[in-house]
Image 1 (tube, helix red, strand yellow):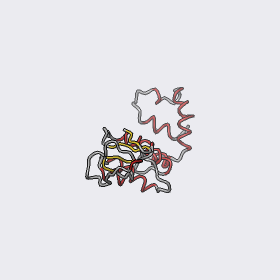
Image 2 (cartoon, helix red, strand yellow; image 1 turned 30 degrees about the vertical axis):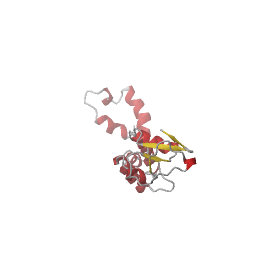
Image 3 (cartoon, helix red, strand yellow; image 1 turned 120 degrees about the vertical axis):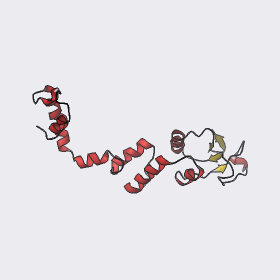
Image 4 (cartoon, rainbow, N blue to C red; image 1 turned 180 degrees about the vertical axis):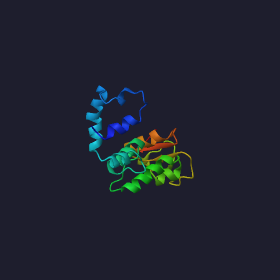
Length: 161
């Protein structure tokens, strides 16, 4: 008999059939889930369930859920702080520059990089921007914010979006 299952069964209402030691489902649970839970390092598992205490692969799983990828060589504490910060942010020029590393340019109609059209990298000149970003970063931003044409992407020499 596992140590885990009696603790779990104690949480159930008194009239639960699992309270009986000879209940077939209890026997199956005891021999599967109970033995598994007895064999795992519960501190590691339970710490991994919460963003504040998750480490390593557990923290990476939170990052994937929140759409925040770990940077190469980034430690757990820095990564955790960035996950929290990115989830609290708003769509502002400053956040796009500092969090996502985008260089923002004032939007110019019919921009063609091949013609070297002049524009400005002053994000306060305009409320509509142009920038270059990987498909992955564009997906993250489009999934996180309603951009609604406020940012258009330069792909090659042309504007997309």
